[in-house]
Length: 291
Image (cartoon, rainbow, N blue to C red):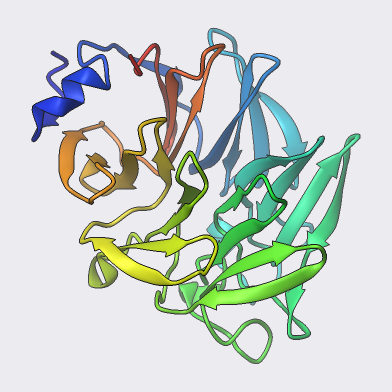
């Protein structure tokens, strides 16, 4: 068994290959985030501080995919090292890009980056952080103030709250304001539940929403930056402790330690069994992690 993993429940042995190798695909980034797998055989991920999206084929060198991906013009209302893009997600044949410095979600298509979801109640968003696309067309996303000066809300220019939102058919709905720093969002594989989390120690809880009624409750007391589920409905939380894996009831199954703090993750590879992890200056890959 890989020594970096601590097992709390042996059921994890039926889910994951625990004798894994952690590959370092790149280690010369600034602050990596928001990975997504492309079926053509490569990953995309953001470097928030570098203000770009990189393309990475495992075994090859990274290359710039989108420059100025999160901010087209810096100003004194922003946190200088957090102006770039964050989460990425495919929406039909377009790539959606959470933009800290431009205060919205942009759409990348045909080599052009253009605004897509950019305001609520007449004001720009704070710094959209993470997003997930439902098969019915809804887009759920979080909007903390991490990209704003001092990482604090500025209601005179942006949103007065740090919210979790839902977009559909041109309309944006604010669905939750319980976090001061909402971060990761993800869906259960059957899309009946939406999960959200925060990486701040003072809001150590994961929220689960019913995607039909949007009623919510606390699932467990854990922190999370990026968040993801596996096909069995287990939840993977990137935290300062490492990668925390809990079941659908919020019970810890395992913890994996890394040399740097993980920020986000996604499944990839031809069979979607590889785990790609962004982790500060590093990006890691665990091949054939899912059994």
